[in-house]
Length: 259
Image (cartoon, rainbow, N blue to C red; front, top):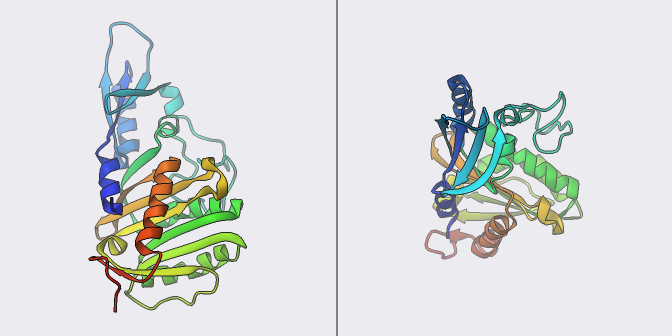
């Protein structure tokens, strides 16, 4: 299964959040918040039962139930959605300092997003890169579509590659000038999925709870559709696929080596 097929597979499993006995304005607020996620928001009124609660389901199966107050909560000043501590990399990034919907998203191993800009993708990538930096062990795999884009990230990845026990791999199509590489490995792949996808995957350095991945497809200029995953099996699949498909010589769409 290719990277693009993996995105489509996750996208097909849309989650549904049913909001019970809440003011329509609350449901509208949640719809606005989840507009760039693969979560459908519906409202329902019951004759009895608690006020303002929500039930998350995926593929018709119950996932979790939360109150509306929990859904709309936000962290304290200076906290981030991931670690609860201030992070320079995540300031101003996608979702930084905003925990609206977190009680729902925390229960989804894969969380879809839509219409992310290139700036959003950089900010989201920083979260995973920061985790790899802090653990300082294992493998980090990242694809930035073309060598031109990768060159813009060269300083960041050179710094990551200086971590003695962190093995860093970058992937790009042969378009633009290649960066000067000292501390990480660049894999050049002449395939559509390398040109059309953006990904960052970290194997956790031996800790399942630290495994995470970001995978997205550019479906329109500057608009990315994809998902985050904290599921160890999904992260392992992405890394294994990249290693097997692109770990050797440069690859073309038919699997042959480029000339």
